Structures are given as C-alpha cells and as structure tokens.
Length: 246
Image (cartoon, rainbow, N blue to C red; front, side):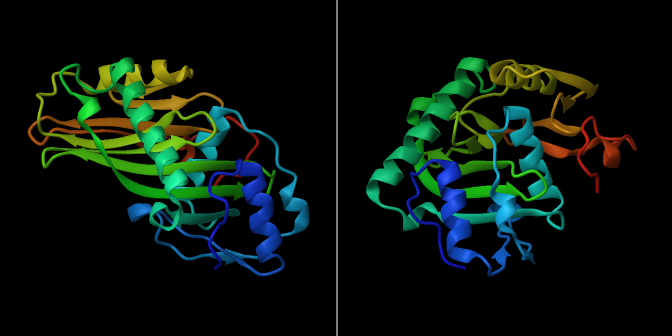
C-alpha cells in the first residue's frame, strides 16, 4: 500500500487523499505497535467518504473498535515517523511533550516525575475511518524516555493534542497513586463523563459502551490507562449507541 503523504495535513484531507490514491483498490488495514498486526482488506466505496467531525467519545469508540475488532468495517493506514521530514518530526515531538505536560498537570503522572527530562524517540501516525457512518480519527502513537530509567508511550488525538491512551514504566520515582486516583485524574483531565464499572474500570459515556482500565505495578513502575473492550463482551450488555456490536 502506498504510504500516506503530507503528514501534517488535516485528517479529513488525509482521508480523502488516501481514498483518491487507493480507490477502487482495496485498503490494507495496518496495526500500530503490537496491536496493529492483523492484515485485513475490504472494498471501499466513494460514499464512505462522507465524514463528519466526531466528538472525543466517538473518537475513542472508533479507536477501541479498530484495535479490538479488526474484522469490523474500519479501515486504517499508518506512517512511521521515521519516513517524515524534519518539520513533521518536530511537530510530533511537540505533541509528545505537550501530552506529557497534560498528564503531569492532570495528576496522572507522579508529582515527583520530571517529565521535562523526557526525550522524544519517535512513533507513528494512524488514520482510522469507519465506512458505516464516515467517522474518522487520526492518532499519533508516540514514545519517549529519560536516559535508561523511564519510558513513556502514549496515543494522542491529533486534532486536540490530548493523550487518550498511556503506558509507561517510571523507574526513577516511587508511584504512590492507586489505580482509582490515576483513572479519575485521567478522565477529569480529558473532561469526559464516565461510569465506574469496577475498582479500576470505567465506561466512557457516549463511546458506544467502550470500557477503559487503569493498572499500576509499583515494583516495576508501570502505569497504564488503556481501552479494555466493550460492555457487550465484558458485561454481556448492549452498547449505548445504535452502532452494530460484534
């Protein structure tokens, strides 16, 4: 599949360019990091490009469906940041550092952790499009580290710059927070309404039944807030939207 061009263009333009290049060819569905490893192709019609700007919960639902259920009608394309020019790399670096700053300000990261010592290491960009309703989202998968001690990985919504998924190992500080505190800080920072479904599990309102989980491993310093699945799989419940369930 041809690589996406003009990395810095707005997402909608990127989706239209992607379709113009590949139609009527099949779009290969790629997966980033360990979750983007299932090849899948489906025919895509021009009518599928009637995209509208999704809300943040809708973006999270689209992201969750893309990574948990690759057999559904969600198409994606990725581009490693190693293939972009210096301007695009610098832009991605700013997204990463701003994301770390958000997490620190929200209280998701330990107060003692010096996020300014993080060095951006790279990542990739992924564009997701759901053919059923034309919703699309662009996600930056970014990572950085401080020397040989700390690693921080995050998924950032390219439109808002907000981190919507984090996974890090912070060895330089002692994590005194618990999973409930981390989860609450994360959702308060994003400004989203959630329903707590367990000690460290939350359902995001308006996200089609998407459930997130927060986890901590104090002995290793790992801290993570990530999509877990959907209510129909986890709790045998229907989704809270009209979207077709798995």
